[in-house]
Image (cartoon, rainbow, N blue to C red; front, side, top):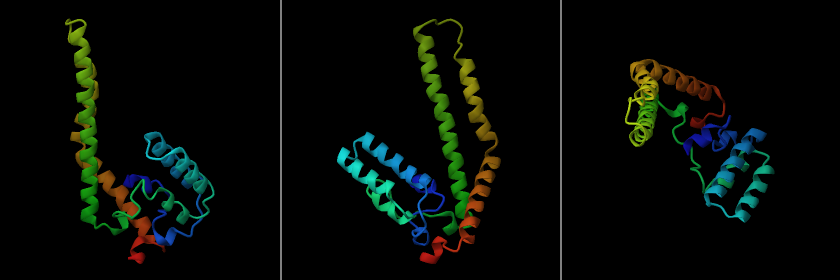
Amino acid sequence: MEDFWERFRLDPRVPGNAGMRASDADRELVRTLLADAYADGRLTRDEYDERLTAVLSAVTLADLPPVVADLVPSTPVSSPARLSHGDIRARAEESWRKKLRDDVGAVAFISVILWTIWLFTSHGFPWPIFPMLAVGINAVNTVLHRDEIVAKETARLERKRARELRRPDRPEDDA
């Protein structure tokens, strides 16, 4: 759920951001999380209504984390400003591994479904090979372009780190 907080333009958990006024987009992020929690059965209707009222009346970013404190982690977890260049590279490589797992999982999922259909229907020409190849190309592309994907993610995280370090309310000032 750490990615929930990364969707905010300014992290509401950072004390330097707490006094900033909450935007409609900030309130919408929290409203969506509450709706998902209600749909999952983690909130009763009364809890959902009470929290939604709090979100819609939130004025500053500091008003938002308490509403979802028991639904997502509330403490900042390794913002890019606190990461070393080596840590950023490691995070970028982990991002590539996740992409590769997702791509291979897609190939496996499609393969199981298509070969099952083929097995129970025709037994003729092995047509599932063609869709498998089409989906498999993406996985092969991920493997072949590993360095490029890692470099792009590293550059993205470095830019994010630089933006956070330029802000006067950066997280390190609060430590």
